[in-house]
Image 1 (cartoon, protein in one colour):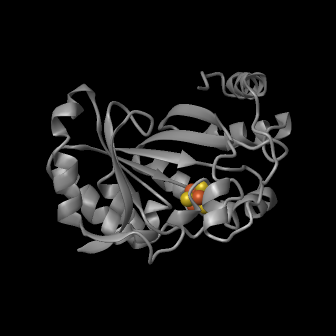
Image 2: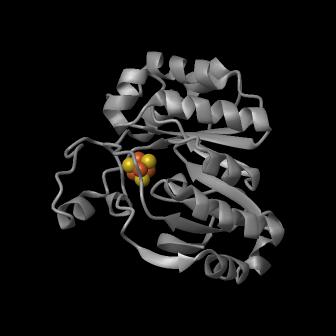
Length: 241
Ligand code: SF4
């Protein structure tokens, strides 16, 4: 089975436990205002790869996986090519490689459910916990992400939740309270991370002839991030990275 791959990065340390091969799949149905990777949006972009060839590339790094590493499918939105994602994950599982899916949870089709059958860890960017603000920030529906989260939880798949803190969008105490309410019932939640928005994608937008939606917005400073983490940690009664 073939699909479109944007790029493959070896030995990343941020997208799951240990050292990982990160496979960025092409295509995304969302249009987050803070997206760093607008070049991943188009399903027709990137290069065509066979799932077996992707897994061969992953297996070359197997010696580095001894400390709990593995493969992470990212994007774009890897579930925009859910069948292809499922096939890569199935083959990695067969090869006893730890599998992670870095997703916005923007779909819950039968192909997505199948991809989750072979997923050990979901890394989910919740983006915003208020429906109207989620739609304004991403162009998508929060209800879909919530259904996806419930499904992951019901299946008992380990979950790391991330949120990119975008000043003026999701950094107020009320925003964090909504996020805490959404996360509290999740039984398989293992880690919560808040990441600062950063304005580094301007050149990519310019190259693509697109206006950068948050042009001129300053990233949150360390003190602002520390404040958000402290509020959320207190609300959840657990550490927030
Ligand atoms: S889900 Fe990710 S790739 Fe898609 S628009 Fe949002 S930030 Fe960009």
